[in-house]
Amino acid sequence: MADTLVAELRAKLSAALRNALKAQDPRAIDSLRSLMSAIANAEAVDNSGERVASPKIGIGSGDVPRRQLSGQDLIAIAELEIAERMRAAAEYDRLGRADQAAALRDQATVLRRFLESST
Image (cartoon, rainbow, N blue to C red; front, side):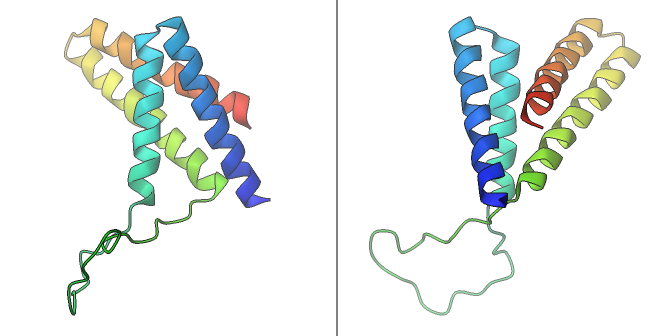
């Protein structure tokens, strides 16, 4: 079940990005690509505390398995991206930069619509 939710969310995210590219909607493109990057970063393996005993040589020798995220992890990442944009928009409003705040709110709306269509 979890694998199917992850696969569905990834497929919907890719489809949403394709649609944004076809529509030439730069804010949607930016926000969806940013979400994809945030997900990829969350899957990265933290090996900062590991010591390498001996170097491996050859193609693929540096490859390590990525973290496996659940569907709920992906949703949480999207919600965090929305919250970060809304906090930044509030800060831009405080600084008198309404244009930047509106752009961030538009991106948050794109991500919110993606989440609503996915759950």
